[in-house]
Length: 597
Image (cartoon, rainbow, N blue to C red; front, top):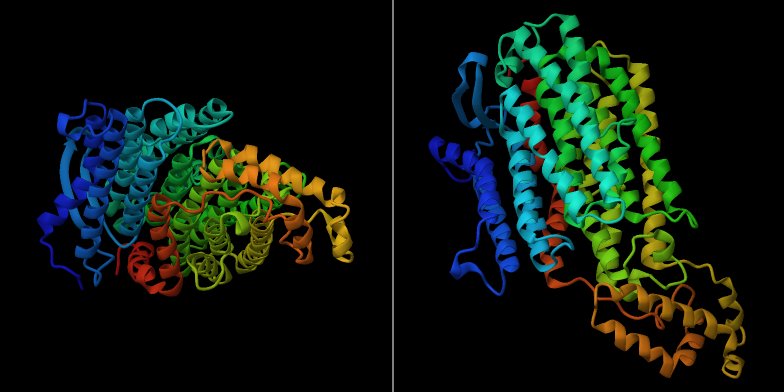
């Protein structure tokens, strides 16, 4: 069934356009703007160019999804197969099925939302020309990774995203950005060198680099020893990008230093390239090798789930001086652990859960990084103790819509039923309960129990973050004393005036960076009548800090435009998971059965 009947040639053109047009747009971004398109200044013109190109790619991706034959999602569609390097049998082979289509649309959506967000709030740093060009090159490489069907083209596309992300972190990032950028590039490049050797081994030993032919052959052309070596080499490169514990240490530094847009793309798109490689290449092409390493992959996955959650709990505790962006980065280590666990089960249930968790993580963590970036812009810091301490940061009282969105993203991330994060984790655990033939059931059920425990830890740290950032700390227990003598407190305002003055002065300095117009007026207001309002407020526990604290700019229209699609899709995927599972399940069944539908 297709929503709109589109001819195969048009589908081919759409897929080629989606892959190539961001690259052409990156070149155009570096050229001078035509006179009629300059707008107020050249910077605005190039940012608008980024929105236009990514918007065109998103429209093409949506049309491609609409024209996709949903009755046959296991069949490669919109295929292009052209000989490129005959001597090596390397071909420009493009195509999509039910596994790659959702990732293609997710990439196009997130990149467009990042371009739209950057148009209204450009990142601090060098000229926007280079920024827009790098984002477009990053988009082209990511889209190509999900669309190509040749091993060497996959490697080229896989590597294409490294340099743009390096410069986005190094030139537009925050503190420690150079060290974080170098750590990112060194880890991923070293992993990629090993992965290239594995890809060459598979291609040369099987006689083809075509991923469709390799999936159909299902490892019959490779000996078990070759498969084991290939899985070890290719898997190491993919595990670094995923990232799998203990190869994850580049991720928290990269996320903490990256600009908001860089963090969204890194978490929402780039991490998916590693897990996609496991599903698209290793599961069908080297099933015996995967079966050998599956228990070890599952063990590393559940260690990553627990480790990431414990790291988040350590950052979230009072006095830890934890960075909120760093906490969300460590949460990604745990969430991607569920994806790896699902892949390691080698069952349709587990792999479908992994693919669903991939998309859910892209939506939810992308939204989280958008929101954390907005909080950091308003306060000038992402330090949890500063946000939740005596500065009166409680978002529910100062920016209620922003606080509500942060709470929504947090509960979606912890896997609340009815939202997208729930289904991927549940299906992954179901897959671990009954793994593929030849895998140890007791071992995988132990992994399932550890993973389930990880979901409890995830709920713990996410709820702590919501309580501290959205509701504020409740450390000033002395406030309860004046409640019993509120009438007489008016004659002795010195006791409560000290705590109420501190939030006003501290908070008035923190939002100075964003330049919100409300702040100057709000900081002068408490001087006129801070005491009466402060003395009457403590009668309601939890609310006393809100009245004296200056108001923050709540969700702006451009922020709402960038975040609403992520919220809507998180709810849609949670309430109607069959939309995504109906695409992935037939393709996964065919992949695991050796190309047989």
